[in-house]
Image (cartoon, rainbow, N blue to C red; front, side, top):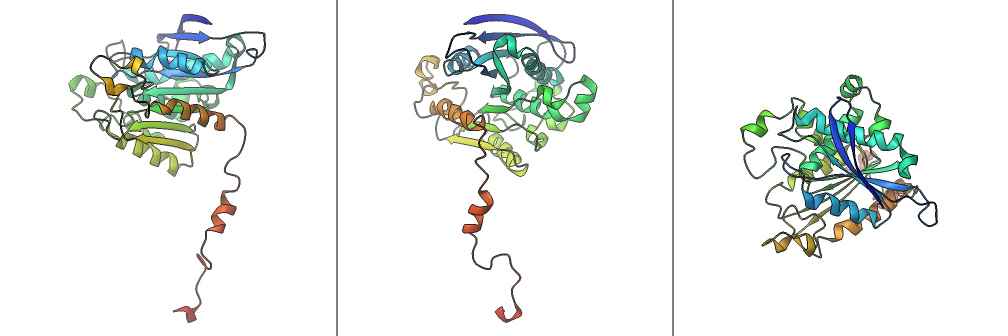
Length: 301
């Protein structure tokens, strides 16, 4: 495995770093192109969670992915979180598409995965990818920067759907674009297929974040798989005992940890090339009651 930290410039000329994890080989079975997992850790916009960084990259690498971790713009960094954090993600995707051969990746199988605040960055970037005003200002096209799929772990999508007051520093840093405050408002038919997991008893990022984002995906005909676990609280990463912090044994739950395997199965569906919806209309017709939707004759009244 080759690991390195590289410096990139985003579309706003801001310098940021990406940690890369690459398995390259010319021998089978490792000689094929791998999908890429772009990891966007959480951390309340003030830091990057270590438990949602390298452990996530390693987990997906063990299952056939290459990976990178985006060190995106934070509250205390020069400039503002938006647009720069979103542009950091979009610039990373373009970089890997442009250098797919070098990193032995499939440029059409790039996945973003964002946790907590990182979920806000991931969904904000998805909105920015196809928003004309950002494309025009920063000089990119949607197909260059849009991921092929997105995974969201206990994601913040609306900055006001949290169980505490944001505080003056955070409030002053909010973008003026309402679709970057509540990213469910920025969902369109071009939004990547999305896998979401959260816990019903999350005491920090309210489950209504996931519910609203799911509804937006459904309204825009975007494929989605979502899992609302009954336990897990918040910030559990892979939900393995090894990653639980001291006095937080609840962060290791075998039940909640199933999200990883479920996400891998979902990605296998997404990247299989099969159309699992091709018989939807025929199936719906089988359940349609006789005469439903037809104009009734006067004698029926």
